[in-house]
Image 1: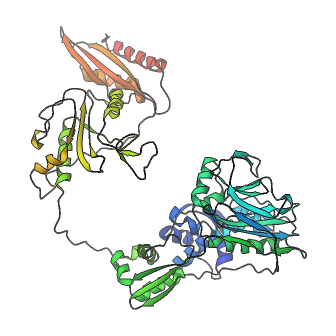
Image 2: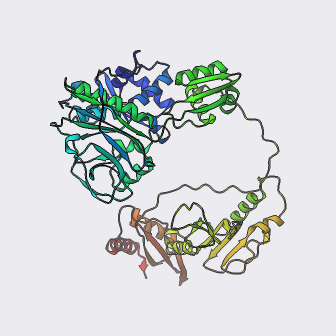
Image 3: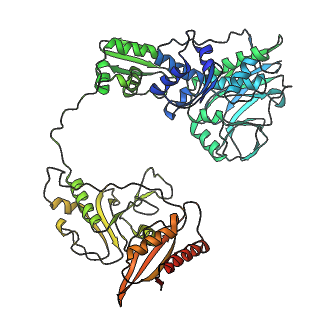
Length: 612
């Protein structure tokens, strides 16, 4: 969200704000990440990274101004635009047919306006945010959006055959947007319609049909609250991400729609009004009347969660900075949460806010008391010990899907429609095959894998099992120390009765730490292998050969040359190595690898050795 420093100062504060750098630091340490600061002459555009938990109320200049007021203790002054106009009766009708997807829709007719070029103050503010100035009417809607965070829209009334607005689902029509692009809609898309003519995709984009132009005289203003999930699905499906959809996706409070309608009306009248301009009463279809949320909280609870020693008055002072109305009875605060703070729904939420404004850096560090009455998990201890034994014996641990397309235990709310069942057993077949195909790239002589995890029966009973799979017959005595018997290549063992019979534990210290490994990004392109066998004569060794192989193959050799065969005859030794090539940038060809192998063979010949 791009914020203009001078916009904040001139519209929301009588007291002078601190310097640009101090404002950036205040936001950074108490509220948001700062993506970029673009310095202008005595001004700056601050790109604020507003995270989803605050996007409902802070994707606007006012939202950021409120945060600064809180952090800096500078009183905020909301300077309403003073414009006189008289409302007259209206014939406008609003029909919301999908009330779950649009719980508030406000429309208002203005007649006899005159669209002009926007004044410099308006153009300069919008252009500083990267918005091209169009005209007074379009610029007014954009200004309201960036100022208070509520998207609005305007339709040319004279292009409609009746003064009726409908909010309904699409019937799969083709929609032509303001920029002339066309989109195929589906029945899942919410649209704004008049006399069956598409006016807009709700919350996403306005349409060409009722587009306002410099000749527009009579208009309908729209300010609404649309379902965030519906807007998100439509905008993502159509790849149509707009400033409007971004805000509706993050669900501003429905109460903001009414405020935005009055704000936009005053702004349009001030910019486009004439002596004969008529403003009709707004029509408000509101299915979501404001329900105030109250949270009870005690200072003792605040201190317990934060590790502070705040007094009641200090908590009250912070609540006053937020502007929250509250009553205090005894040692308990009863706090009324403003409608725009949809993120505050529990006392823990409020405690977090108090800590944020108090300053986490002001909370003293306290050494925690030693833990007593430690309960050790026998299951955790022995599963780790079993894993250690398997890993020492060349096994690799894998994780496979717990969800299946078929089964006996159907989930009430599956995470994926194509995998609605919980697994009854661990199936390592696919994982084994993938690893086997990549054995050379992994640098392994043999694939041996295992997984520990939960499986479920049809009654939702779960059990912990160990599944093993190997190319060759498994060592029958591999897990004897745990009382686990192995008889073939693929084994699935119920660990619960096994662990139950093992001795009790009173410490984890015997468990050996795992070796630390660093992750390296893997290539998404296929690998190629080549084998080369070389007679090395005399005193020369395989190490000398490996050195040549690495020097001549360069960065495309992604594994150490792996010795696959060695034998000696008449004092000379034949070494056979497997080479694995792979690029991080493209798919390698046989021709490219052939050129590399020619260099390798030439270097071997220069050494006096012989390629078999």
